[in-house]
Image (cartoon, rainbow, N blue to C red):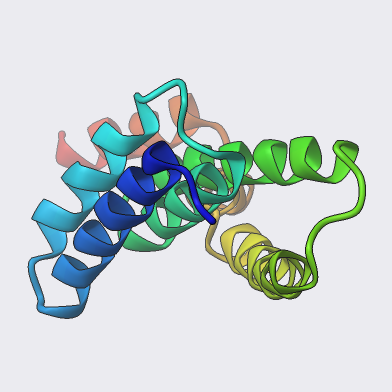
Length: 136
């Protein structure tokens, strides 16, 4: 039987994710963020909340931070050893989705686009010089 505290966190997590499913995305993200501030939050909910926050943010840097945090929590859970069959099934699914998301993040990394543009356009100083010369 689950403890009162575990039930409390389960219900808060369900409420937050339920808001996402009813198109209240900002409220959902806010509630998940608040949930992460709770030091007693079980690791599985911490993992799920970080992963959902990573998926829910449009800003690449913020999403990458939450993805990284989810990876760390996943590692902590794995250090604890064997898990109940249902939890293990969830962990395998989350690991697969985290890996897919990580690959997508690499593809969408805006820093790579900036570096590629800088390499193809030459030094900034030369570019600025050409612009100022052509205006005269």
